[in-house]
Length: 287
Image (cartoon, rainbow, N blue to C red; front, side, top):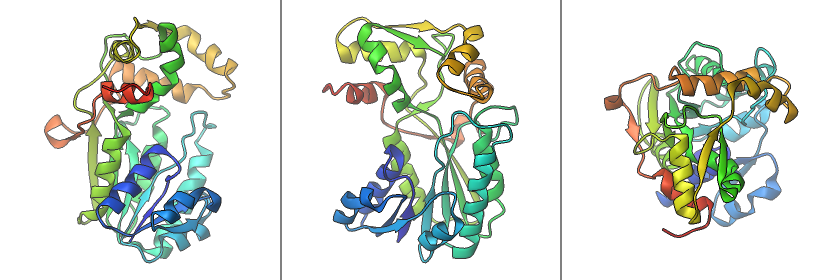
């Protein structure tokens, strides 16, 4: 049996479905048991747990062959990442207490990078999990293609404001479907110690590629326009952020190229789902 976090979201749900399709037993972790009806119908066990509660996590992790772990997104972390530190404490105590067969953590491209950015949260989690006395896998996934859903309304109007710049600069992206398949496979695989797997899509994509993909899916012209770097902080603060610097530095890292994978292409995995396929899905248009 495998325990899977995040089943109410895109990645965790696909991990669970891939495991079920492979004939595996699955225990889904949810904060609200009422949200697990579809998983009960699919034959899964349900464990009610909070990512900051070591006791509930330990109970959910007990007696399984592997655990898929992901942390809730926090785009506005306070200095020092205090919320992530609480999650790390709960995860490590739970894993040490329950001793599952292995643990796979959904990490991120750039988790190895020392420069300050929002992605330091995954770096902190990786550092803590490396100390566990069990096989630990880090699935370092590229920028989610599905992040483009936030651009759909703008794309319908014909202009996408872009923080990815220069507009023709490609960055590593990947579809959540490819992440789900690889995470499930990692849970079913066997290894010792720490196992790092880096994953991106079939090719790299730019802001212009997102605009072109939406143009093809929507059937009208779409262009990307750069959001001036010196306007970011004021814009993010108007949106309610209190600590925008980590997010700004993450965007800088992708734009300047210092956020990338640790290993050469020959050592990475590549998904099969294209950005164009994801954008068509987001617009509910058939190929």
